[in-house]
Length: 640
Image (cartoon, rainbow, N blue to C red; front, side, top):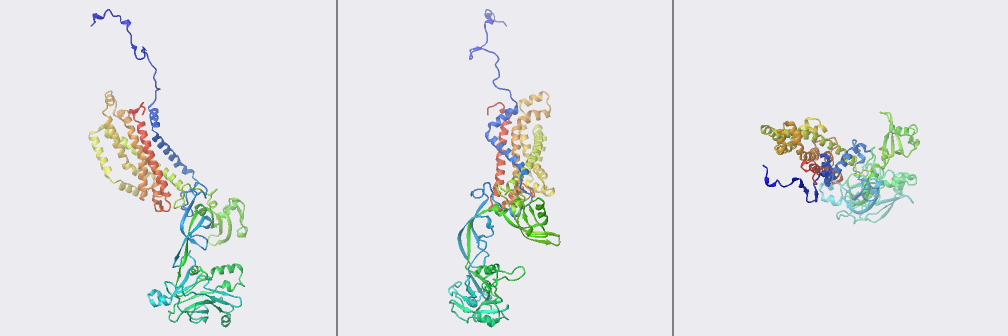
């Protein structure tokens, strides 16, 4: 109804004015550019720095998993000579990450002038720690005294214990010289007994013949307790015995009459001194080393392969022991690469030599022998050929050679392992990268299957609800109630042990978590106004599920799915560690299972795969959190 009181007002004189701006109202341009959901999600993801770092680490690990294809190191064939090589990044001598290892308090091998059981050429430096004295024969000890006791000593006879103990100097207990005839000099000290015992009464004899009972025995010294140094002229005895030399003669100490008959010992004469005029230099050196100048060394001499005792063998029909032998310990730095890939004595076959000849690396004539060997290229692994033999069975030649092992293995240069090698001689880094590829393949396959099943199952259960939801939830409760380890074990035992079988076993119950999360999200969003409005306008159930509800729940579901990947990797590692997983394949669980026995010897074999698994777990966690925020539709256009 028209108000008559305002008829006199002219409406044309009034207009809307923007009081704040002081001007008129007009259309303004948009201050921001239009964007898509994907661009906006990427922008929000980039603002989460920790998620970006996690994505970068995942990308690096993914690229690294394919790097195993290009590795020059074979990880399928065990190499016994290349086990436990130390990690190497820098050249040897830097003292850090250079392929060397420092060993302390290791027994010293005096014969080879190196630590016991180690390659002398690979020792960078060595220093003496200390000594200990042991009362028994030990291969790498030296010096000491030879102790001879009768057999009755071990029967508990106290009389025999004190009456049949002998201690002899190890350093030249007797010396025979040829100047002016055969002269025997012997020195013994009655104070050098064992356990407070003194030397019992004895006599010195010369035996001609090999059998004590039947040989002729010449007494050089009567029973006496005079242990002072004495010299005996053996010329008369040798002349009386009618022998030209003492080659087949023995000097022995015989126990006193009150000592058991078995308490005596034979000692071979030092032939290197006696026959020095007739022997050549090589023979004299060998016999000098074989003479009785070291108690520990002499006690360890045994028969050769032909059953013959070598020169210097100390024989006795009594129990023989070593007393107060010196065991030396050293600390040294060891180059594991020189030890594994340096010069080695090897037997190679005829086909290998022919292959080297064909490549032009060397020349060799099998009819002539080792003298014909000639090196033509520095790439030739063989340094020297010692001898050759012919195999009558296979009709091929076998060559005893010295080779440069890294060239023999086919490397163009000395290998360098960033994290060393494992117990099978495989490059640990290559094995880890190959295991990463296997673990990621298993995880991605199982995650994709679990995500697909879980989304469909959870969407149906959450959207329709009622009896449908009740029946489906009871089924998942029954399935989740079965112990996972039992189900996994049965699957791996009944089906073939491979990647796809393991992925199938993970998927049997792995989708339940995704289904539960999807069901929860559908209950959360299916009653919202925009869903009801769409239903009112005639949208089908499929459109409501996949067009309106699922996109809003995608952020949380993607996060749980991304976190499922490291969970699958961890499950694979756990089950393989127990020996039920991908045995025979490369995976983190198999690596940890194989290397757990060497954690004290070389802990890096456990540390490296454990660090990679930890990086995967943390990175996927950070990455998943970033995706959750980026894919959340409620944050579209927001600053955070």
